[in-house]
Image (cartoon, rainbow, N blue to C red; front, side, top):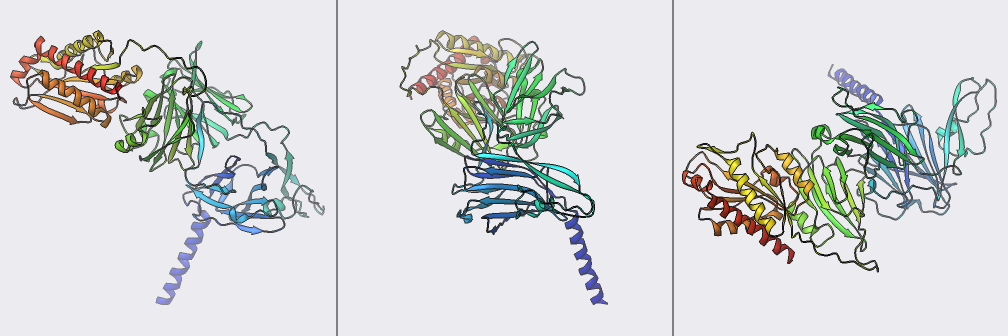
Length: 636
């Protein structure tokens, strides 16, 4: 009896395994892309839950010299594909559905006679297959452009493309069908099946090879086959490698426009208008069209054009255009990533690149205006600030700063010229981003360099008076924190302006300003420094004294300098420097500090804080600390 049960168990397991194999969802082979700059072929694959086999092996064949390999449990989306090369050790590459029971896609690569096929490498990069056909190294840091301000139309120079047109034909019973001469006799089975003679009268696929090289004008990297409303924005989807250019704006009507170079739009979706707000909360509309033979254009008509941002998916397969005010980070990705390493490489006097390496694929957005570049990394949780500062020091990226976003996310920012050219590439696995900036003028171009007159403005500061309007801050005995902070801030501004410094105030009167609005104000003003003024409070009445807070390490020197002047000027307890994660000093991208000018909860100090003498001493000390810091930085 035990033996019978044992055999029944074995048979049950066998049938379950067979059933599971048969019913496993196949992976989808989406496209074949050739990169003639690196001699690689990239097979874009949408994996099933089972995933692809981790190790890939190919078989070698003779007469002609070729290799082939099979992608198990996979289906080819679209037509059979073939690339034919004129000036290469590779003669052609064919991609087809080899069998459908089971589902197997076969790739055949034919080489010139004498080519050493042992040099060919197959790599599985996050489920996508890369065929390396040259001695060049290829690892997971293989990049494709996602943002290019100077994108060139991709021309076929060494490649002739044969389009495999699939036609349904009915072969009469008893008819003998001769294979056409352009179908190679030893091609893989899928191609042979299409030309076999038969006598059963069934319908077969007939493959007709048409040379398109005389008419072809581009090598399309991205094919758009859909766009729809998702998460309150417009999602453009397709397959290949998406790339975008710099956004620009037009009026009458107001609209934001972004071009996608080397992109083809499915004819069925061109110029169809979509309402972005399905709930009628806005009148924004979107269209996408084939602007040029090798360029797609997305147009969003809206009164909030400057609010729209492009969000690139981690696999560079889709692009979301959304009003930033409606953006929810949790809708973008379930993966949380961390920035682990940064690298800088100088290419020439004008050009250098910065590579950011992450633990997981990154969802990001690129915003570029005439004087700044902002790179938003929406699902990045942390970065090593000391490592970043050390890496960027003495490089062209030394001015780049990072700050944490309100939820999960990081913003990388730096000032650039409107004539600088920016290019951003993303690795195949989505775990690395390469930023390349080509400077418009380095002073080394053998051209006369015009030295601009020094501006009378010695530096720019954003001063932030804490609280305001309906936000009273700390309150004791009818005395409000918001009134003290505004008075001190206005005094600081007056001193700095009289010394030739430019000042911007987050609030100039008793109005409410949110924390994020203060951060946004600073970002738009692009100052060198940010200083926030507050008054401290405690439950107990004993604490008193001055604290100066900072968060980023690059803000510590400013905090130290200002705090030293405060303690020289004011006779109170020195509570020292404090590293704190206050919102406004955490999310600003320049050296930023928050000064707690005293305790409103301490009776004796409260009576001093409201006097003109204490306010003026506080303002004078902070202003002198700012001036000393500016002078020290200028002397470096």
